[in-house]
Every structure is written in structure tokens, then in C-alpha cells.
Length: 394
Figure 1 (cartoon, rainbow, N blue to C red):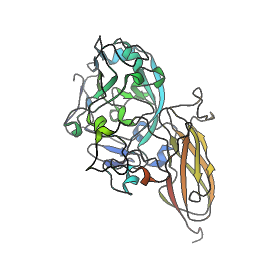
Figure 2: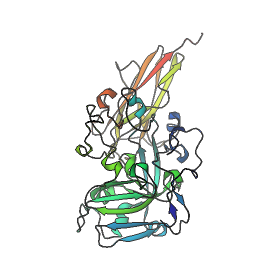
Figure 3: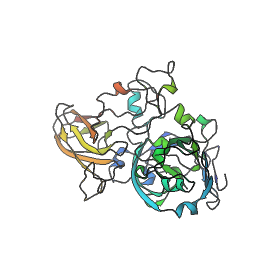
């Protein structure tokens, strides 16, 4: 494609932050230390988790780069960056989370297939760009459209990268046209992250951001937008990122029996302590993040310091100095995580647990065994920390 290329090897990868935990070198998949996630409400780009399926594309000439929009529409177009930048710019604060977040912990119950992830395959940022609704209007698709007059019902996003799962073809995904044309869904063609141009790892020069949905649908390095009659037929929609029950294995799996995963469930993780932590007796600050998909705010975060016998209501916040209310769209960011915190007194070794409830009353499963699945996605079980207390005088 003019202006941008998807390499077939890893010889020109960008430089990454040295603190990242590398889970896969080629393709590069890495996450920050969990403590970094709660150091600020917005996650710096260099500490935002990196999820890739192939070598990072290279922009040769930004002036030649364009996105083609075609398919079941009357007026196909090619949009250059200057065309996209002439549209109204929106800033949307949204949390992206890999569907495989906490996969490593699920794998300890029974082996799963996929890149291992700790608890940090998640991040929160302000994404700047054009709303997809405005872009689609340029090709004659009005807002709040569910079907084009030519039968288009889905919007497919195609990357420029090369993935082995697609036999060297590009990564692709889709969302419904009704979601794509709903201004309230805040789907963006983003060219900024936290007020700066996207870096290469995060999709420079242009990416899709689909708030409230697993990160797999927010396609980076956008090459094409196709209006299609059925959902995307790519590998990552048809044969990946689907939630199966624990009884399904690689011998009896039927990929067509499950819909592609979209919204992520309610999630909560302690980030101030490692999974096994040694402390001295006394006051301990427990902090972490909680998030739910679909724009559902966090109603409550419960913390237990006695293995689940009793619970404490942790404080929740987003922006400093602004009280957080789960369903207040004027003062809270509905697509973003909340950070929680509570200070407790711990005098003996114990198990600390955190769990969240969203505004729809959705809760997290108590045990990972109940949601184990062969791909290891959506581990939203109660997060547990084992704390060993040592005598401060020893």
C-alpha cells in the first residue's frame, strides 16, 4: 500500500520500554509491571500493553497513506490523513483490555492455548480522532443505520500487517453497522493517544478504537474499511476470541457454535501487591483497577483481607478531584476503568481478595475453574493475593 508497508520480518521493530515483561518476542507481546497501572489514571503509551500478531508496519510516506472505504455502498472513497483531520476531532477516554488478560493464572488450573498474560494486558488512554459515524457519512451511510440499501450490515476493519494466522494476510475484525453508526458508541478512527500522535506499536498512523469491547476489535494500522453483509470471515473473528464452556476441548470444538466475543465482562485486579507478597504487620494500602465493558460503570469494589469471610467497600476514582459516580456520564468516563483503594490493618498471614460489581449488577465468578476455557480468555474470577506476614523484629 502506498505510504505504509507491513514487513514480513522483525528486523525493524521499534524500541520498547525496558520495564515491560515480554511474553512473546516475535510477534512482540508485552505488559508493564502491575504497579505501573495504578500510578496514574491514564496509562503512558510506552507502558501500555503491546499486543501484536506480526511485525510492526512501517510508514514510508504519510502523505501517500490512505484508507479505502468500499463494499456494499454507493460511493466508495479513499481518505487521506488530511481528509480525516478535517472532520470534527473527538477525545474519548477508553480502557482497552486484551481478551487474554490473566490467561497465565487460568492456565494454572488447566493448560490453555495462547500467549501468557499476567494482570497488565490492559490500559487506559485518551484517544483522539474522528468518529466513525462522521467517516461513514462521507460514503452515504447516515447515523443510526443498521443496513445499507445494498445489504451491508457489518463494518470490517482491515490492517496492513502480516499475520501467520491469516497465512501472511492482514489482521481483520468487524462490528455491526448499527454500532458503527451510533454516535453514542464513540467508535473512533484515532490518530492520537494521550494527546500525542500514535506510536508504531499502537497503530500509527491510524487505528480503530471500539470502546467497551475486547481489544481484538480495535484494529491497528488501518488499511481498509469494508461494508459487508455478514460478519468478518477472518481468523480472529471466526476461529478465535470466542467463549466456550469448560467441557469443550480441541477434539470437540465447534467454532461456529459461538458468537465472537465483543463486550468484556466486569474485571477487577489488585495491583499494589504481587500474587505472593511478604509484609510486616501493620497498615497496608490495597489498590488496583476495575472495569466493565459496554460502557457499564463500576458500582462497587469489595475487598476482603480474611479470605472472603468479610468485605470492605473500597473507594473508587477516575479523575483527580472529581467524585466518581458510576452512571454520571457528565463527570465520569463511561468507557474507562476506575482505580480503587483501601487501607487495611494486617497482622497475620492471609488471603486478600478483590471483586467488582458493575451498574448492571454483573459480578465476577468466584473460581477460575468455573470459567476455564481452552483459549484462556476472559479470566475475570476473583483476584486473590497470598500475603505472608513476617515478624518485624526477626
